[in-house]
Image 1 (cartoon, rainbow, N blue to C red):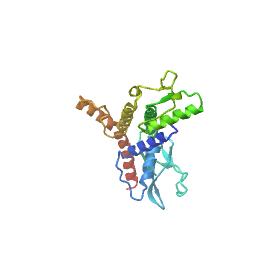
Image 2 (image 1 turned 180 degrees about the vertical axis):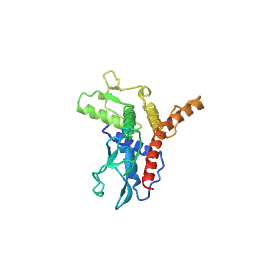
Image 3 (image 1 turned 90 degrees about the horizontal axis):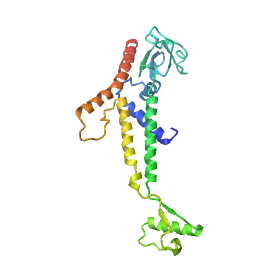
Image 4 (image 1 turned 120 degrees about the horizontal axis):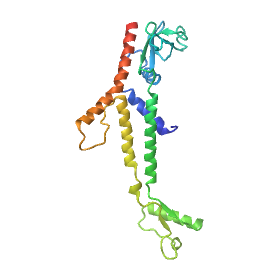
Length: 256
């Protein structure tokens, strides 16, 4: 997970996830930080301040109400001394927009699929490297090794005729080298790994609500199979949207 590929796919999948909903928030609010807070922390608080008016801010939840849900929020912002450290009751002193029912973000979901895509991507790179035609040479000394290297360089450079010393051949005239691997097609899996990489991304798209067939290309793909995947695609985003709407309704009620 500590790799460039993993960080790349985390960033890529995060941007896909926040693109599902089109947000219309007040112009004075920073949209980038708003989405980062909501999708990473899982919720964002809405407060009225004396200097900045009604704004959002990252916060923590605490306490329990009659339904065993968080009762208040607390924030720590040096630019908001009048609110920092205070317990602000949700629904009366502040509003809370949450993404998921359990007050969690989706970084675990992003990390789960980013790890799989990073592994598949690394497998593609390794397989392409390993599929190159390789030779093994047996040299008696450093001089003969240099002769082999020179001969191979000339061959790979495409020279039409390569002249070598007879010492590079065995006593019976056979060449003193052999193929390390001969059946390249049998060991080439990059095309299958690329297909698997697409399947992993399609599964992620299904989770976050981006339409996709999520099936291999088949001649007999029936409409019901596509429709079944469309239903699965809509499930989780509908849950998110329901929670978001509840928070927005609460915020508009407190701060018209």
